[in-house]
Structure formats: structure tokens, C-alpha cells
Image (cartoon, rainbow, N blue to C red):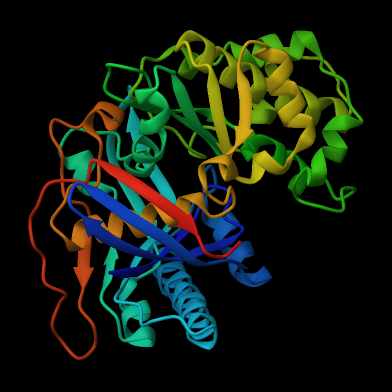
Length: 399
């Protein structure tokens, strides 16, 4: 089965796309990544989206418009990917798995109570003529889980050979939020959202009219600054970091006003480069604390933060006993890993196989994730229940 996976993450800057072919061979699943792409949101859509995100207020009218506009953007991205795949001689795609855009993740007292992803799947189905698996997080939350992270379905399969060799290894995603999956010998995998990765840095750069970019391109801004130890200690006092896993968070907590509140509580003054460098050090310290406490020896890094050399150097300094490597060493494109993961989750759903990992999300049991929007001509791909694959052999045909 060939599945097109799509997601826009917590950096909400565009849509990551991956077309993957999955074929079952007994207990083994063979996967081939045939296309990856990233499609930026147009400026007006991103402006509307940012204006509606916490801590800003919004209206049902705005939510409805965004659901439609994001759905149409995902539909256009999927149509472009399918056309490029056909032009390259690719075989027909069977289905789409669309995560959409998270706009609110409702957590109170450490319990996830709900989640909302916008990007109506019907627009994708209408444009592509394919069934679409969407609304992928809520089944886990209804079963008592955090609804996040969901990438451990992929992480545990690609990390298992290393764990079988006796190593404690982890997959780390540095998007807007940092999340980690830890696989240790003889133990079930565990995963959780650590805290902000790029979210706070992006927020302060986007709010400053003097900066040419809304993110720390190539780590240039952070490299020009110095860590402010007193401010860092205030940032590290955030109670979330001491909550036990499984846990999840997002921009409902770590947004631009959060930085303003911390600066007000601290009472000092700081230059923009020093603030960015201190926020980057916050990410490095919280990640280092998480992986060293878990006894991790190797960490495979993906997401936008994997392209920030200042952050990678800070991680190495904060966790000197841990080896940080890119997920390319696992055959996974660091920029497309989450899109590949959601293609895999879509494949699992369409085969009646659970897509959550309860030891990672806290759900009471495995659950088949998502809802299927049928293709315009009617009919749904047959769903056949079965055991989850024991291993995944992944090939990246795009390289």
C-alpha cells in the first residue's frame, strides 16, 4: 500500500509531505520513501493562523475559515505531490493520511482532555480522489492518553535493532516543541514532550521587526549571544519540566507572552541575541536532563532544530556523555520524519492496526487511530485486522 502522509507541526510554517510504500512480509514491514517535500503556507494564511493561536482569542467564524483554508492548502500540497510522483514514474497512491494543523491541545493538571487539528480532510479527498485518514489524535485521548507523541510507532520500529544490541537509544524531534522516544533493552518504549525547542525562539524573533527571519537561521542569532545564567534559572523553574511522563504540551503554554511574563518576573534587561541564546540553552538543558536521566547513549535528531548548529553544539556540551546523530543514520530524512510517521499511522489505520503506543502516551490500551473520509466515488479501502509488524526495514529512494 502506498500512502501520502502530511503534517504541519508546532512551528506552523508549512506542510511536510511524504509518499511511502509499505509492504508486509510476515512479521516484517518493508517501507520505501518515494517522495518528500515541504510546502510553505502562503503569507496570508500563516498570518491568520498565528493571529488565532494561543494566547490570542479567536471566534468560531475564524476557526471555520481556518479549517477550510488549511484543508484547501493540504489538498493543494497533496495534489502537487501526487503529480510529482506520477511524473517521476511512481505507481498510484492508495490513500492519504493527514494530521492537519494543531491549533489547541487541551491539557489541565497534566491530563489531556481534548485536541483540535484543523484542515478538513474532505477537501483533500475531493482534490485527490483518494480516501483520507484524519483526526488522528483524539482516539488516544479518549482512551486516557495524551494524544502525543504519536511518532513512537515509527521510532520504536527503527530503533529496535539498536535496542536489541543492548543500547539505550532515543529519537528526538526538535520542532516547535521537543519530544523524545526512549527505547531501552528489556523495557517498553517511553515518550513525552520535553518542552520548547524552537517555539520560544521563533516567537521572540517574529515579534522583533529588526530581525530578517522569523527563526534562528543556521543558528546565527543565538551564536552571536551569550547565555544569561540568572534568566536561565528563572526559565528552568517552569513546573512542567518536573511533571512525570507521559506528558504533552504545546503553544498553549510556550508562546510569546510566556517569554514576556518570564522577563517581567526576572526584572532584568537582555539584548535580543542574549535572549535567543538563553532560550536555546533552555532547550539544550531540558533535553540533556531528559536523556541523561533515562540513561540514553545515542540520540537521533530530527526536525528544524537539527539544522541549527548552535543548538547541536549546546546539546553536546550539556550532555557530554551522549552521542547526538541525525536520523539520516537511520535512513530517515530529518525534515520529513513526522510526515513519514503519519504515512505509517495511516497505513496502520487502514489495516486495522493500532497506531498509538500506550507506554508512550499513557492510554489504557492500543487504539486504531483516526477517521476515514471516503473517496468521492464512494467506497473505502478494505480494513483487515491483524498484528502490528515486529520490525520495519526502511529505504529512502529519494536519496
